[in-house]
Structure formats: C-alpha cells, structure tokens
Image 1 (cartoon, rainbow, N blue to C red):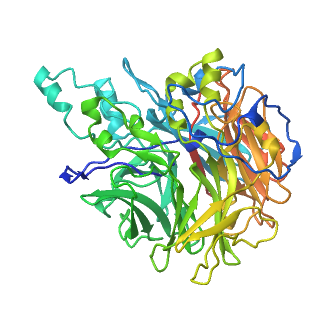
Image 2 (cartoon, rainbow, N blue to C red):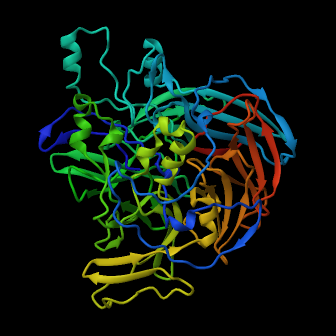
Image 3 (cartoon, rainbow, N blue to C red):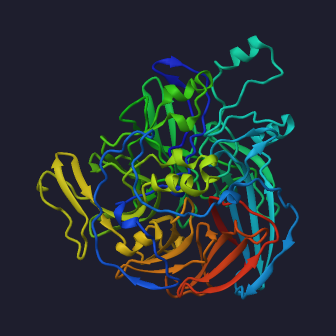
Length: 603
C-alpha cells in the first residue's frame, strides 16, 4: 500500500515535533488504467480460457479537475454494494462454517485477513474506506473443516474512540473535531497541534523475524498472535531507525531477511529510505532490533514527496517507483488548522514522468541511471527478476492517479446513476511489464531500443548520459477490458518471487471492488475467470500443495462478500491449475470487504 507516510519533523526549515501521519492509501486496492472505450459494456464468462491478442495501451490526456472529472468508461446499472462497508461486530470465539463441496484435507493452517470493520463511532462517521477500525479475521483450516473468528485490533485509536464514543484520532480521510469537553480557548489551540500518527493498522498481515504483525503506513505496527488474533505489543519503527513509517507490503527473501521502505523528513526535505530487517532474533523478546537503512533517496520536490504503497524487489535490487502522486507536507502538518484530511493533501501531476530507482541490495548504492516512464500510478507490483542483463518488473498500473478520492465511504454506499458516475470516473488498472537494461556504460548507444529479448514489446531508449526512457508491454489482451482490468495481484511467492514465472492471480474490477477472480498465464497471454453474479471476491492468495512440481500446483483462497444475502460470506477454495471451484466454507456472520491477507501453514 507505500508512500509511507507520516511525518513531520521539519517543513521549510521550521522544526516540528517528531510526529507521523498516516498516509495509507489503499488505492491499489482499486485504482485503474487503460482506454475508456474498450471498457464499455463488460461481458462475462465463467471459467473460460481466453486467448489474448497483443495490444498497446495509449496514454490518457491530462486529467481534468475532480470538479469536472474525466470519464474512462460508460457503464450503467451497477448494483448497490453499500453492505460491504457496513459496520459489524467481531466474533472473538471460533464458530463453525457450513462446507459446500470439498476443502482439500492437505490444507492445514490459518488464512489471516485484515481490513476495516467499523465505520462509525457513536454519532460520528468516518469519511474514507481506509479509515475504518481494523478488524482481523482468521479462517482456521484443518482436515477439510473450517472455523472462523474475528477481533477488532485493540489499537490506541480504537480504544480511545470506544472510550469516548466519538472519533478521537484523525485517520486518512477523517479529521477529528475538537474535544467538546474543552473550553472554547482550548478547542481553538488544539487546531494548531500537529496531527498524531494513527495506529489503526487495517491494511495487512506481515511477518518479521518469524512474528506476525498487522500494519498500515505509519510508524506503528502491532505484533499479533495468529491463533487468538490478540495484539501483544505495539512496535514503533522510529525507535529503531530514523523513519516516520513503513509500507504494509515488505518483501522477504528465502532466509527470512525482510526489506521495506519508509519516509523521513529533515531541514533538507523528504527522503525515501530502503530498510532491511534481519531474518532471525537473538532474543525471544526482540522485534525490530538490528534493522538498518541501506540508503536514502532525496525526493525531487522536498516538500511534496511521491506517495507509494509498495515497491518491487529482484535478487539483487530494490526497485522504488517515484510516481506523480504527490503529498503536500505543508498541507498535512496544518491539516487540523485548515480542517483538511491527509487524503485532501494528495494531488496528481500528469506533467511529471514516473522515475524507477534501482538500489543494489549488496552495495547499498542507488544506480546513477534514472529509468523514466510516462506518468502512471501503481499500488501493487506483481514480480521482478533479472535475466540476460535486464531487470524485468511486472506491475499493475493506471494512466491516472486520482482514484483515491473516489473511495470515500459515501461513494461506496451510492446507488443508481450516482454510483455509475463514481465508477466511470475511475481509470482502470492493468498489468504491465517494464524491462530495464542493467548494463549502461559510455559505449551504450543513444536513441535506439536497448531491449533484445525475444517476443518482448517493451522498449528502453537511452536519452541522456544517465537517463533511459522506458515504455511497457501489456501483460494481457483486449479481453481483460471486459473484466475491468486487474488489481490485488498475487503469485506463488515462496517459489517464484524474484524469479521468472508464468502465472499471476488477481481480481477483476467491473465494480468499485473486485467482482471476479482471474488467473493470468504469461505464455500466450491467456486467462481463466471465476465469477458468481452479485458476489465480490477479495484478494486471491495462492497456497502450494505438498510436493508440488509445477508452479500452479495448489489452491487459491479468497473471501467472497455477499451483499445481496445476509450472513452468507464464504471462504472460497479454487484449484489453482484449473480454476475450478473445489469448495466453500460459508460463515454465518457478515464480513465487510477487506484489503490484504496471508496464509500461515501449521502443517
């Protein structure tokens, strides 16, 4: 999700107290990209294999103001999905599920999910989808049976809100009102306080040194017991390294070494920092001890750094994508005074190129070569690997970066033409490949394509001494437009992250949230589709079967939300190879649409 985001220590040379701000932007969760005409009139097929023809996406013209938004599609008659953002109660004790079909007996472990579960506190309502109080979910799978439990994260934000029966802590899209118990003068002075970083970690489950944490994009994480879902310790990144936050999407090497990114702020401006966390503990009580910053990259605009939700990693490199979604730090630190939320401080500047920075993990140096691309926004990368002197990076990207604003809760609760309007002003997200030549030296020619990989339509042209301009190859064909593009990408991470691979999985977006599951095959650019009308599947997670010999030997797990039917959400299990449904575990409680999850094997 990174753009890590919080902050501020110093703006324009004026020292501020060490605070951080949650700039968690789960756009990735639903951004968008491609040409609007191809998206008109989506059709659907259930579990079809679709051959794709190569196509080249064309860039959208500069987006207009949100007061007169550009329309990317012309879809009508979308069903209301208000119930996917309806507050629920947690279920801290395990309950049984109704099994339909078959859950493979070899699956043993916990499928853990994270996302917002409470959207109102007393008479106060949160404004943005990303603001809801974190609700942690566990689907325990064993011997073909599934139990379910959930628990609200006992964060400071949640406890304070609960105790005072109002929204006390500002979130990404919600600014708190002054405490009504204070006098007029005290309420006035409170508007000049720096915003405090939220610890409402509602984005993902992550692991460091073998422990599970729930994370957002501020400096605060919570260590969580995956069996009870109880938070056991609050952990502050800034106590270990000089950063103001970290993404909710770290990458992990086979030995357990984890990499992440985080921002820092000083009198010299904003910096993007590459973080490394050791693979193991030296003492049981350890958390982030031994964490180091490999290097720091200065933001091009010191007071308006780029937002980033995640990053990519190959065997030898971390890839940071500096995109034209900008965060105005001055607006953020004065947000309480001006009554502007963090989400109001984001802007999209389509006049700026996207810059891909390569950081060598072993030398800890930033490559002097700037790899440039046209303006785009990306929130989730698919994979990255090195081959024949090139770094291949696959990601989900859009040609417009204004989608975050569309995910206000009021928009998700609209119906009829008002709902169609919200969807049609979202640019679709599509999977793309960039190929970066790693060997640039004085003899490298200018003004010609440097990529000589077979069957590759991406280009990389040296335009200056240390500049290479790149264009992408589409990892799909025209048929993907019928499914609204693809987001929430996942792969067989344990075996194929940082290596050449064939398959990835994701959600199709013919609505504001995922409404189909997609399996993409890079050989021939074919895809398989699972859908059930009126149902909304979440991020697909791949679980390999024991003794797997092929990349797609395993299952796909996804929590499917059922807004048209009460208390019928279910855990879906698909055969990852055929994409046929194996079984589902129906949960007798309502569950809101969430963000990210992971599977923890207990076999």
